[in-house]
Image (cartoon, rainbow, N blue to C red; front, side, top):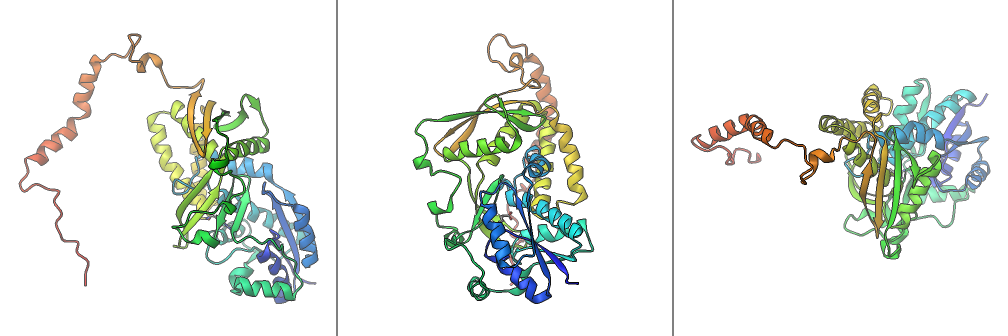
Length: 412
Ligand code: ARG
């Protein structure tokens, strides 16, 4: 019997060429799997291309709800953001794709799974680690990483094997799901160059966005958004509504230099209007309901969480432990946040919560204040005691510390 390989199939050049390559190299039956993660694409076209390229069977699964529930919501609660900039859209999608590859492979009795990641990025790490954590018996094949074909050679290979690829092939390398769209390569490889308008599909150029500001009120319950402008919405619709609204106002683009796991610095451009809006609103609400201690500790948890997810360690037990901590803080994160969008910018302009720790009686400068100012004096006395003592001690030292020693000259 022929061996079976389940390939994560996007319908693009790399994964289409991979179908043929896996057949030739392993004499295997290739089963393709395409997931609907909310990418704006035609799944019928993808299926047709899979069969016409030689897949023996094609799976198409709508995993949007599962993606939001199991991946996006934890990311919202964690304010998941790599290097403070990237809301992890692609990074969150990969472990789910890997999990579904394993599921289908087990169902089909396949011996291996395959994906179209190159050997230079983070995605290969996310896929390989997750698959092997879930089923150590499955082999993981990454044709693009193995074959080392250049894009031109790939095109030739495709032509030779009669693989049809969209003529309007973009100069950009992109990946998308409902949490965001990643854009790389082409003119973006020059970090000095502004991304051209053609790079964007979700976010309107601010120059063309409405001339008056737009407002959105997000309602949160237990740390996740549940309504827009007072209207309860299902998850998929909610993310879509916010994404389209913010995008129309020109908001949601990230342009930054990112540190990849493999040591490469790369220029990354993202469109993630919903993710940025929701996380900003969520952070603001947390600021209203959580204590200073909770916020400060949670910030370090968020950084660690984002790093684990970015670096492919979705299955790492520490991630689950961090999720448990985060979960306990989210119970009180309920309330409303009002966002104002205008010409590519967004800010929070109002918030409220039944669990708010804001007390007007304490913070007001009016005569309604109940804050006892006289107790501040004693507080300051003790609060600064040690720092003051140290500052005075340093001032009386001879010679004064703090001047550069000059010892750290590089060795010849
Ligand atoms: N740099 C981002 C990440 O590591 C985006 C990767 C985009 N992937 C792609 N196959 N185009 O998550």
